[in-house]
Length: 470
Image 1 (cartoon, one colour):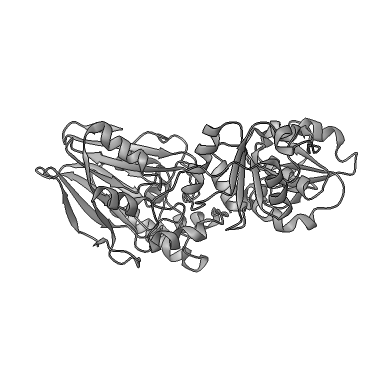
Image 2 (cartoon, rainbow, N blue to C red; image 1 turned 60 degrees about the vertical axis):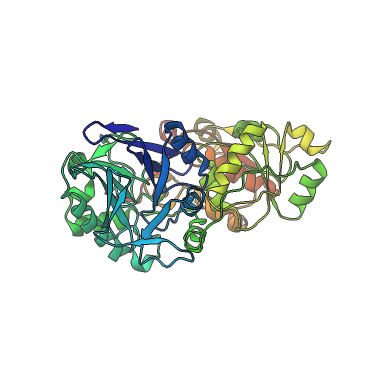
């Protein structure tokens, strides 16, 4: 958080690391505005309560494609006015804004809407000023100008990405006309798949940046339009499948989050659900899962990768039951899933896998390193399966490996050759998810829980098919 002493306005960041996003509350000590709130609005309400301020305005920079918004619910709970672009087609009442619109917040703050298309066609950024002096306190850039990067332009369809990339370049240049000391506060760019590229090395990471700093490090403000668009489009890779459901949910007007816990599932129910093709996800550490788990359950170790990959892989609408170490872990996972529209879980259970299996044999599989792989392959007839994304594969992969990106594996298991399969990713998380999918399908599998950077030093041969970012 920061307090701008000259303007008397405090900006508080409400982080959601699991999605790589941030929401913001800005206050003059009496009233507050909120920008791009997540679905679980209790966190924002707590920030306002801690400061003894009243939320009077809620602003959306765009109709989000990576999470279900809490903006409408927050406005209804607090009585705040709810603002987004007047051109957005939505199924609820709102206070529509267009380029240049100005909204007074309390007696000391003024919010100006700036059209910044690129991430979406109707994207708005918001300049927050001290009303009396006009001094800029903050610039909320949503999915436009990020820290060392920009929002990706392809979420509305591949047919729009070139036009949106060009618009993103122009929008960033428009924002760059603001004073160099203007602090910028993006919504995306902290690990979100909504960011087109990773942050540029040397920029301030999780700390606040400014227009002046971005002019020094951000490709969109350094490169001409042709170079920026070409490199941006060449660097785009897959994004989570659940994104397809977020925009429609946000346009329809999502209801408030229901965080009440689901019923506890007993062993008979777990077995029946797995047999019926439902998903039972085990949140314990991936090493613990490999050592012993309920046959047919899937490994999704609870970490910052959990939400994106479970949401990416699960067939939308499939009943989901969670297994975990503790009620607190399961409650946190439920909160994460509600943010992406997985609202009601079929059940939960805590304890040990022996309890969940109710006397039935546990399943397991070995865990290895790249050094272990080098000792057996190609001397033994094993399949090496690489489940990284396409651009990761192109940047360097093991000679002779089979490539199936993790999100495609559930429907492509039949393409994995018969026999023993050693599966790897970049660091081990996706490899264990993939190993659990293969194990549930009756395959013999070994999970490589190791950093891919260790593959070359272990003596394994690598091939690179992507040159100079193309």
